[in-house]
Image (cartoon, rainbow, N blue to C red):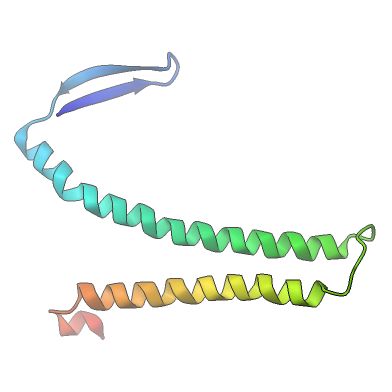
Length: 110
């Protein structure tokens, strides 16, 4: 495995050096942890998108040029429920994840 460098100014990649055995082992050890973290950050991105969608709809209702058809409250409820459900899901996901990680250590679970 090789270590590469990226020169943003020149927009090119260049070889720096070969990785030693310890660095390769560390890479293999940390790759799944990094992938898991990226997936978990996606949950927060979804939450942010739900909030932005809800806020955008609220702002559109406050715009005097918007015509209302009577379904505004249903749409507001739907968007707010999406946001709250996502927030609750994140909370439950991390609670279960923490319990699974701390299964062997009862003190950490409290």
